[in-house]
Image 1 (cartoon, chains in turn brown, blue):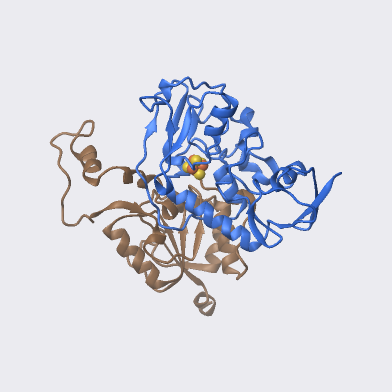
Image 2: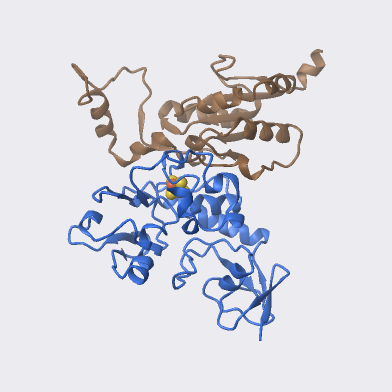
Length: 183
Length: 239
Ligand code: SF4
């Protein structure tokens, strides 16, 4: 039993500037989750609540990079994971959060925390614990090398499953036409 | 007399004067393209239809077919070049498909699916571009314009209006509207214009019907562009 466990593929996942929708889609593989946990064990992930990523075989990154903490976490994932995957539109293009790239950062902050509808005694949060925002939101391949891309908002559960199954069994990763979409 | 050339090993008949693209389309063979529409004079600007004809790279939409020509299109290296072109088109604009009403009916997406592009993994430019909502029935979103000039050609040649033009050069090239204010609402642009129906992307969008057909049930959601053809031929599916 122990030997079997030692052979499991170690998977780490995280959501940077994302909405956790891609993680929900992973959970959407439904009863195939039972097959999956036979094959993998989880390292850092919202599923385990482990806070720091350790040596892993596969890293799944949801979301783009919008602040200094995202950069740090992403770099740690790259250091620790043999294979790194950009999962979903935000990791791949910046996605909806990148819509702020049209505006200067201070305008976004003013709009949310100073001039926003219903804001009273507004002020831009400046607690030192808060990670500093980057000027623009970036896709993760602009910060680290990415080995695979899984598009979609989110990628369908079936797409994620096909990917994991083929990757874990060492087959070339190939998708049916309907499994790949950018929306 | 009918002459022939070969396209990826298939015998394609053509009439003298036809381009490689004309003959391929007539024979039901797909060569990827974005700026081409057989209704209008070819531009050869998007470069997606570049094929190898007797070893030379040429745009299929502007190169005449010739007897005995050996044309290669669907090869791994040509498809890889097409993916690079597509990736550049994506990162040069702001293509946030999940937030775009055209998604699923978009030919840029469809051609990218066909060519196997998983991600535009170049550095994103994130240009700052305008929206023009001044027209009662249409919105212009310059973030998604790929400069195919189909609206320019359709408005000039089919509608005899000349509503659109391209200004600037190189990375500064951009779509403009022929009105002193530069606003679509100040032109005689009309929903029945051919120019209103030829945009392959979500740059010229009809208002008030964005999601009448839900995502997942659109033209290219089910079948590849190589089977269903150009978006300009599917106006009925989009309204
Ligand atoms: S125009 Fe096409 S490629 Fe661009 S955002 Fe819209 S759906 Fe995506």
